[in-house]
Length: 216
Image 1 (cartoon, rainbow, N blue to C red):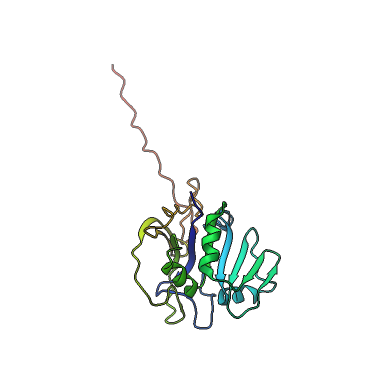
Image 2: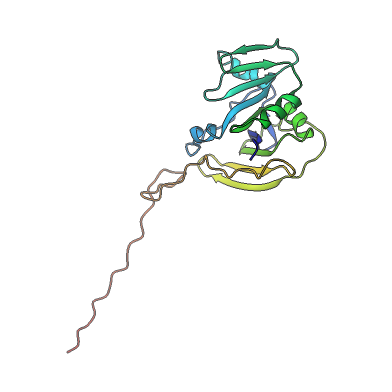
């Protein structure tokens, strides 16, 4: 199967992927998310300039361990760093060429403008969102205005600790179907704890057998 381009992001309940000034401190962590397993599904990440600048604000050149990072920008000069390429070429041509090569799936890391452009070009294969239970009121939208696209639900999981709902959708006509959500750790069945309080759940006790009367 050809490589899929997968838009995989966290989004607020009211549809924003970042706050008005690019804030992302509203994204809560959930212990059941296995980020190692998630990252192993990809070998390449593509993103726009604004998303890239969020990464570089943390220091370095925006490298993501285990992934080749491709940044599309009309303002940053073309450059190459360890694990990172900044490209001024047409994103449609570059992404189409990446999808034609062998390898793991490609992570459309952000932002919304690049998503809109690649979606309109028929290059996005899945939309996978982690809906965080927060209302930002304003910010960077998941998708800028444009044509509508119907999606097909492939999988869904609810994370009780954080209240996050993970959703995986296929884009009709794309390379699909969308993958099942496999990066959520399975809850342990032995010594289960209440997910909200951390208290151990009582185990069911076996009913005592009544003694049977022996025949006289």
